[in-house]
Structure formats: C-alpha cells, structure tokens
Image 1 (spheres, rainbow, N blue to C red):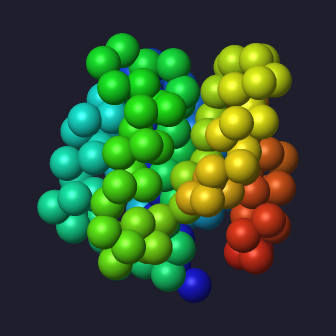
Image 2: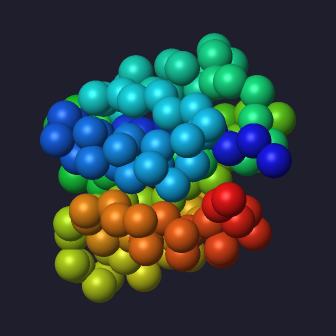
Length: 134
C-alpha cells in the first residue's frame, strides 16, 4: 500500500520535523509541503496529488490567512470524488478542548495529534488507518 502526505503548516521547522519523522518511519512515502492552506487547497483541487492508496493531509489549525478550520470547511465543500481520496489529521499545539471536540466530529478528520509529530504518534496514526510501517 502506498501512502502520501500533504503537510499544511506555516512553520518551516514544524514542516521539517514532520517530514523527517515520516521519512524515518516510511522511507518511500511521498511528502508534499505547503506553507499556506490556499496553496494546498489549489493543489488538491487541481488534482496534482500523487497516486496513492492513502492520502493524508497533516493540517495545522492556527495559520495566517485561511486557518485549519476554514480549510476543513472548504475541503468539505469539494466534490466527493476529490475529498473521498483524503483523510485529514490535525496536528496542533492548541489545547482548547472545545476546538478539539468540534473538529474530532468532522467526517474527514481522522484524528488530532498534538505537536510535535513524533515516531510514536505517527505509528499510532498508521495503526488507526490500518497501515503498518515496515
């Protein structure tokens, strides 16, 4: 099974950490990074994501411009043929329980992970989506 990641994060250090953890655990996973939600959304709408059995969007909630919550709202409005190819994983430093519960209930949100993304958190995510790392 092939896995690809789209990282939507305004912090370059958080992008680096997430990318390195993914590559350490899944050397052959495709990782694409975007500093803005707008750029990631354009990429998804234009169908530029690589072919994969599973596509995960690692999404920061607190970003300038379109934030993570608005990204999810825009994503949910996409045609089903596009959005059914993805699952969203929120990666956030926000400890706001109300926000977490609200987003956890959204259909395309697979789970919420607290920053920073670690190998253990990544393994937990992969187990939840029934994908085992070699």
